[in-house]
Image 1 (cartoon, rainbow, N blue to C red):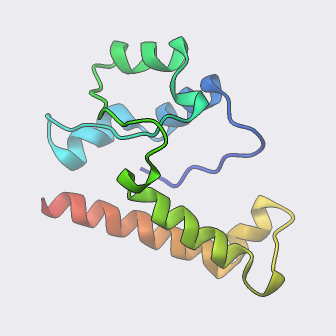
Image 2 (image 1 turned 30 degrees about the vertical axis):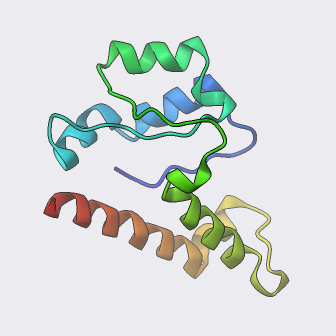
Length: 122
């Protein structure tokens, strides 16, 4: 599973394509076993029929997540950290390529690798 870069506003169709590119259907069971559960929040792109149909057709179990409950989603802490790092000292990236060249991108890849490692241990 690789870090997915989203450019512009995300749509339900784009979200489903991203999940497919990330090989969610094969990586989820490989990393977490056959009884794995996918967690997402209640962002508008997570609730349309297209997204729900994707999860149903691929037999992906979703964790029930109450609306407006970011504290229940551990990834929210990482998003906050990432935003602070991106804008530290007034720094901003004009392109995705500029971000990739910066150390922040390698840190994000380390986070993904750490997540994989932790999942493999459980």
